[in-house]
Length: 578
Image 1 (cartoon, one colour):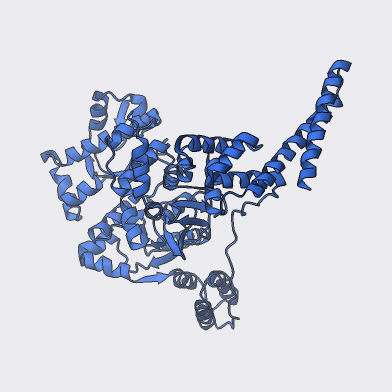
Image 2 (image 1 turned 90 degrees about the vertical axis):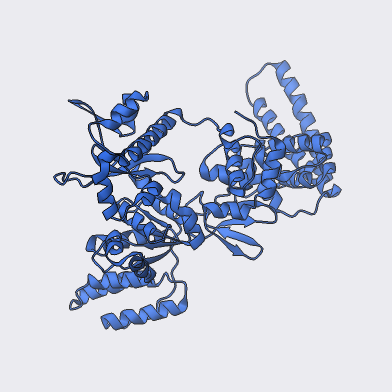
């Protein structure tokens, strides 16, 4: 494995803008001189992450997670430091000395085997679809508008049957156990057989672009299962999957919205209409993990489910979940009775784009949805309709919106309603309670702040104290000493890269954010004294506890002398402080 030099790491960091890099993963908003975002490291409902372009750091004020551009990528992608540097370099267009593959770090070999097997199957099926024997398959796809260009983009292929995939992968050296684990093959009484035999294959990837499974359409009219998906595997967990998000997220971030459809062919129809920011949940009800992935891709989620009862009910459930997660939502009402690909076939791409352009707000959808399911001749049903709708109206931030939709509900139901007062969504995650810091805690952080800004403070710490009670702070102090010895001063941003301890990173970010004026000799004296008092107090308590235990006379005499000396020194420092 190649090593990334310190010079290259510094060069990548210098070129990378933390706002741009974080904005590649999540939606960021400007707030004065800094930027804010929903923190992806906890269940955040209001933007609690602050991003400082001046200092090139980020910090969440709820969960405490913080760091620099490499730290964010490490924590978000869950990759080691070296891989984070490679990914940032790729994002900012920095050419590393070695090719990125040379910096590859250890990954789970069992998962890598499954990824390779699935990629081999994708390539094999894409090759098969171009053969003369698959002409009827190509003809069918062409009629559906899935031409060669679309097939290449979405890696659509064809498994010709006769367990061709199993024979191909077996010949390539893949074990039966791995092929079963990937749900490419099943073991039956009659032997090993392809799961997707004689089917058109639509590969499914995770958010990082790794292949994890397939959705596959039969070419046999007698087959009752028109579409089947990969069963749950180590890689394929249905509730964690958003189809096409690895392709759609770049367009979604540029446009500020992501379209959520029901099925794979709907997503492809959106692409054919020039809308590349579409994804789907594979026909399943949205899960919190899927909402999290959608929220990280764009500021607004636009639900485009079918217009039938099932599709509208799914929109209502998913929308409420997304609303509770703090997402901005709108809805495309498909009242055509046709799927997106049918709309394109009959009305062309402009027909789909025209329908999609008519978004309605979430509250408009809610009122329409509930009204259609309410018997307006029944007072009890109208009352329940009002209760549910007003819950959503009260969440609207704009006062004019709340007044307008309150009046709308009064007009629809004939029930006089008072203007809805604003209501906040309950926070699922309680903010981290700041523990009451003891005097020595404040003193230790004060010492570190001065050390970060002043080589003189580093030298005084090393000569007069040399230790801190808290192990995270102690380790950081040792790193600062090393920086000063080798470079003459502390490089705060480099400190973040040099530790894998997230608690240490969070502490460094806090120290950077505090614009402390620098070294002050009197303040340093007081802080050092406070730490020494804390250490001596703990030492005296330990001696006192030991003296209460049984021991021989000689041992007790030695311990009493130590206890007496400790108390004497402690009183001296306390007297100095007073």
